[in-house]
Length: 412
View 1: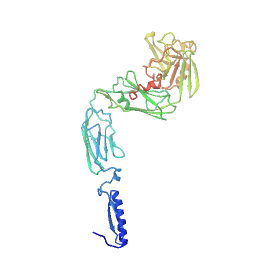
View 2: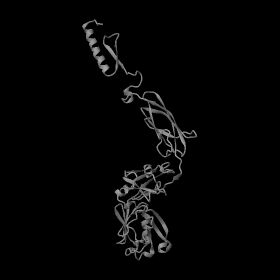
View 3: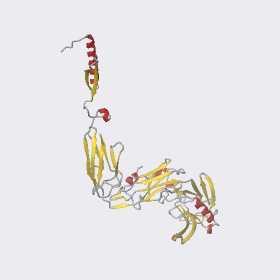
């Protein structure tokens, strides 16, 4: 069939053909019409799928059905109640998600901002079957059902964690965060993953397992900066710690690091110095543990203040004394070492070491020192022939940073 018309018409037809070819190259269907008042053609285009989603509406990808992923997998058994519980969707959005317990009660949860995931926000129980329900919509516009079940593990034993830090308290710059489980933990990595320490300003630190894996402790690489705020979150409820053993409850604490104060003791000079904010504020005559008896030597190394007592009753059956009450006692070791007042040893203070491991001061000096001390202050002892036993509590600072990091279950 031939086209007959004017030369102008032929030119317009040729231009129209060019436009049609250009539009077709873009994968579009061109519709040409001649306007009632114009001989110029107009062009409109629509996607190949008509009114459905176009590639531009689906992020440049072809529309697809919703693909659901469950954590734990549908049908899973012996699920640790503390592990992440989540449903997510690829190629679509979640319209409604419901997770119910065996009694039909809905479990609290929170959708992500983009409606592509939903996670629980409350703790699950032990030995219960949970059921998913709800709807998702794929990028193809078609609905998909959220469904399936999983069953949590039955706990043979639940383990409680004792912590050594508490809300609203102020601690010294060498403070260590400790969680004591009182039992050996087999799955240390799972426990450590559930722990977090947030600091302002940011402070490098690491967890380390001590005491035959019955406790985990966190220390900074270097002493804290004064004024640092610290928040501990131990999300250990439902975390598997071993075969049939799970965490009993979460623990948390928010606290502050106070001024910098470092105590420096030298067993050979028989002096105890107090350094606050870089300035020496006190120099006390002291008597340390008897050098001739290894069982009485005050160990060298960096100790940490653990507690303060107006008076303290001392007993040591090995050395035949019982209920000796001393004033202004500041404990810096689980082995029984204190900085405390002792009037009976004033004659030796500054001259000779005669104690059973403690640092003896004149009572007035001990009272003055204790008034300014904080739990968490470092006590650096040097000069003695015995080093701190690394199996003791708060011996963390006797390790080099490289040694300490190796005690983490996640660093090996």
